[in-house]
Image (tube, rainbow, N blue to C red; front, side, top):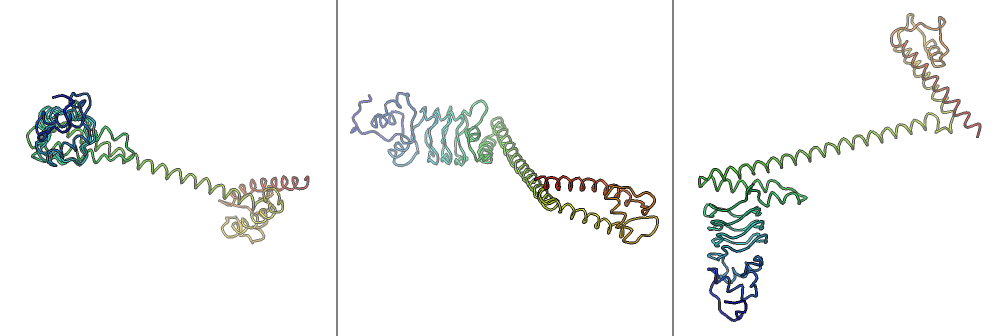
Length: 314
């Protein structure tokens, strides 16, 4: 039979290789018959239609079906012995009947959601050297890496081979199952770690912005950005009075002091003049606070002089 077979020629149901060739030639698909091109999804759908709308006994054995999309297609009881299904997409396909068979090459296929049951024949299917299905190898190109899908596929195949006692193949699928679980855990950890880093970065940004707010508020209140020298005087008065109250209420001195004594001690400390024996004799924290107030006073006085001079020179 040649490629020039008239389209009007009647072809039997595609349940043998010769019948399938007849239909393919009738549709002008001689290159597929000669093995130059793989079958397409459209070819398979038309063959199923020619077979009465069912894949039962449809002869796809030793056919090149490599890399085509057969997702959610009903291939129950189709003859797939020796077919080249490498890297085909079979997500959601129905393999409830005998399905694949001896020497069927299914290396790198995608099987997520495929219906594989006890009646499916997978005994001598070739899965490739590393038994890595397309569900796993193609996950790297996906933005939403759902490793749980791979785990489900490998677990289904593991249980199938365990049922028939092929523990060696079942062990290979068990290894891939745990590998996908490891990748899923790693992905989840990376996501949690990324969110933690984002939280840290947000906290650092909030802290930085908070410091900016405090800094500019301090500039405005303390010396008016260099334009309000009398605000430095106001700040000096607040410091002296505030620490005077602290000395009076909480300070520790050799002799009890009055508020005027505490105010005098605060003013002398602020001016960094040194109080010698004519100021109350402090003890404990009041002594160290007096030293700190001296440094604060020197800084405030210098700030006033710079701000006042800048204002007057202009």
